[in-house]
View 1 (tube, protein in one colour):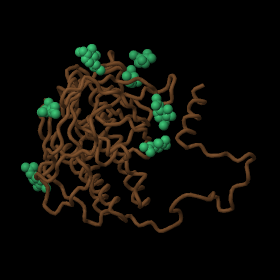
View 2 (cartoon, helix red, strand yellow):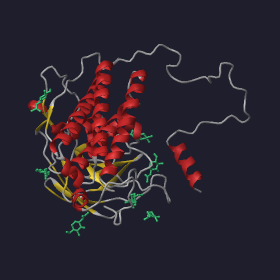
View 3 (cartoon, rainbow, N blue to C red):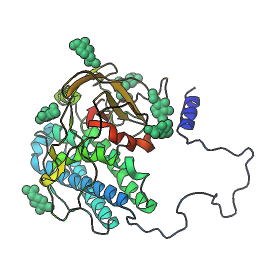
View 4 (cartoon, protein in one colour):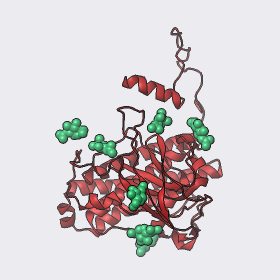
Length: 364
Ligand SMILES: *[C@@H]1O[C@H](CO)[C@@H](O)[C@H](O)[C@H]1NC(C)=O
Ligand SMILES: *[C@@H]1O[C@H](CO)[C@@H](O)[C@H](O)[C@H]1NC(C)=O
Ligand SMILES: *[C@@H]1O[C@H](CO)[C@@H](O)[C@H](O)[C@H]1NC(C)=O
Ligand SMILES: *[C@@H]1O[C@H](CO)[C@@H](O)[C@H](O)[C@H]1NC(C)=O
Ligand SMILES: *[C@@H]1O[C@H](CO)[C@@H](O)[C@H](O)[C@H]1NC(C)=O
Ligand SMILES: *[C@@H]1O[C@H](CO)[C@@H](O)[C@H](O)[C@H]1NC(C)=O
Ligand SMILES: *[C@@H]1O[C@H](CO)[C@@H](O)[C@H](O)[C@H]1NC(C)=O
């Protein structure tokens, strides 16, 4: 039953390959026809503005992670870390993650031919170890999803290969921070992607000052979106200790939960050195887009008053029936003017319809 649902769903997204009726012998050189860029001499560079701007955005993300992990280790005392259940070996792992970020920044700088961003100054919204871990879990979430959103659209497939090899490491960091927070490590079947403009919207508020030669970031900054009854507040109040995995005794959120939203008007200055302004090309706020796993699900926005509204957390599973609930983990919500049907590889068509967001929704 499950495998039937999976196969039909995969055919829907176009993954199903037509199997030959009887197995022909393999080609003489053991390489079936097809594939992109095989048996060439790959050049690991950027070959378009799209590649440059995408990878430079990822580089800005690697730099904040490098700074953040060091900053957290310096800001809190050993006693504060121990009280949050994080011992010397856990702290060494965070230090090692900072080293990984230095490596990732070096790689992306090389791909950009040395023309990429340099490290900046940052501001952070945490005062306790648990808040620090929660922020790391969320920042690495949008760092990871921000890359999945463009990786398959890069012109240079060779550079995409190297970026993939760094982002799989970042994916592991994200999961470790969930474990440090005492959450279920991976409550999804698929890690979602978001567009560059969505990732830049989430990143920009934390960068305060950059070297003046840093390349201007061309992605859009959407107006900020707040979840007024953010489940993170409840999560941080719970006394959960770090664990490899943890069944939450009461799930953080559930389908049918009422969610309050408030958003800013466009035109606000965000990002470093007053150089960026939020904007939107969307019409009136009507829907809430929930981006998670393979899906973009819409719920109606109701009780709209000025820049506030309410919606209801949707149910639904990725492949229908008893498969993975779409809304789980740390995922993305946006206010839109349209319930546009998009799938992972054409998500960028949603950008013109974004009124505000994304906000990170800590759903489980
Ligand atoms: C979620 O996305 C998958 C893959 O595109 C699709 O097969 C499925 O129908 C979607 N689920 C829902 C509830 O929209
Ligand atoms: C600002 O960033 C530079 C690196 O670009 C760093 O040398 C400096 O220490 C930072 N200043 C602060 C206050 O963090
Ligand atoms: C963990 O949660 C799953 C799913 O709700 C349940 O089947 C399982 O019994 C739980 N295990 C423990 C040890 O609580
Ligand atoms: C999210 O996943 C966790 C772990 O599998 C599960 O206990 C929880 O009920 C799920 N939440 C929802 C809303 O389905
Ligand atoms: C969003 O929440 C932050 C922190 O609570 C607050 O400073 C900001 O004014 C809020 N913005 C909107 C548009 O509600
Ligand atoms: C809108 O407000 C009414 C009255 O306060 C409330 O009953 C309803 O649940 C709200 N709708 C949503 C989607 O929250
Ligand atoms: C996005 O792609 C899906 C097929 O995967 C297609 O059905 C849908 O119409 C596309 N969305 C738009 C807005 O073109």
